[in-house]
Amino acid sequence: MDKVTKFKGKLKAQGLKGLALDIDETLSDTNTHWFEHMFKFHMPKDKTKEDILKEYKFVENVPEWKSEKASKYIEEILHSNKFNESAPLIKGADKFVNEINKIIPIVAYITARPETVLDGTKKWLKKHGFPEAELIVRPNNISLENFNLEKNRWKAGILKTLYPEVVGIVDDNVVLAHELEKVNYEGILYLYGAENNEFVGKRKVVVCSAWPDVLDAIQKYCKIYK
Image (cartoon, rainbow, N blue to C red; front, side, top):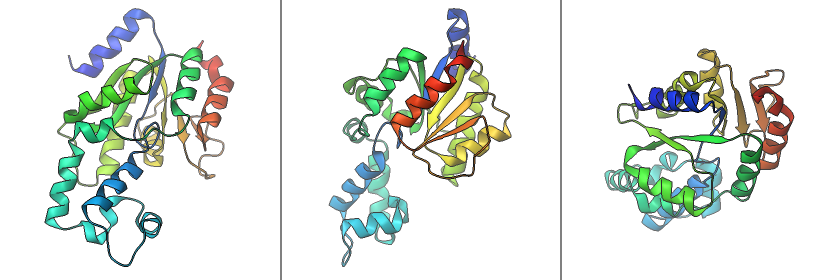
């Protein structure tokens, strides 16, 4: 029996249904943390930090950080517990998550972080006072090629397996919405940080631009958990 199936059985035995949370860019301001580390590693010439953040959005898109040396540094950071433990908190995420936990239990954190940073991630969650819950991280067999698609396809499969014990997730990635639709996930995706009209009229995707909107949406839809 794999870990996810075992976890589902545990929830079912306890008669417990609840919500899952993503971590990076949902609870943790990880992207900013990445850029700050890369600026210290090598600051591209003739550009300000603000210019780079606006133009490239993700560190892997910055041309000056595509060297072999940079790639090795990125790989090192990716597997660094210290890096993940020191990531900044998205303002208010801790407060709102604990309010949500009073409405519906937070039963799992599902993240595409590798297994190597399990310890640092647990310490980060504890440090910021997030509810104690199962931590599910990305296994080693998930391909890093076309990673955004592959990680969300993996996550959608996890959520499909865990339903109806896990009735929804708060996550920032639009690709997850499409992957959940493909597997006919019956739970709700609270799409954090999004501001678009793509999902208007779709009951299973609730667009929430900020954490107060997530709390409001869960209060509105909490009747489905009863």
